[in-house]
Length: 183
Image (cartoon, rainbow, N blue to C red; front, side):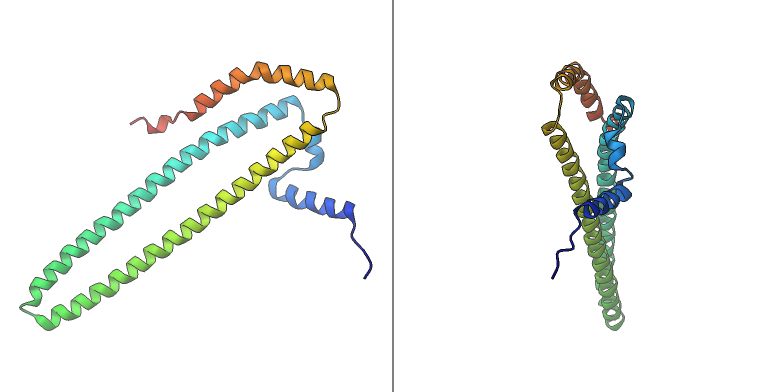
């Protein structure tokens, strides 16, 4: 068996796959300007806030759904109690009605459990995708830091970072605020 592995083509295939999915090219990243990088950093910070907002929204919606299911269960419990009392007078009808109520309730419970499992699966997949993206971003940053060529560029970048720490800290504090929760 001959070795037909082509390193260059393999790398190009990987670039195309990742680039097609995330909408970028390696050459675009290496030619990034200060303005583009600043714009991307701002968009990333805004997306952090949106993630928190979305998380609160989703949790509130799930809580509402659970409360609706609890309310339905209480109502069904009340109906079953009433059917049991009517059963003393009309035993055959009550037996049929209770079996019907059990079947309907079991179907709803099964449906709710299935829906919950599907949602958990989707959420878990989304978190894994998010984690993979963060790991890629961190790896890129580490590699860029390892291969930084000029000391002058390193010193300049360090000075710029020092100047930006306070601003970034203030932006982070602002992004932690959740004005939609002030009710």
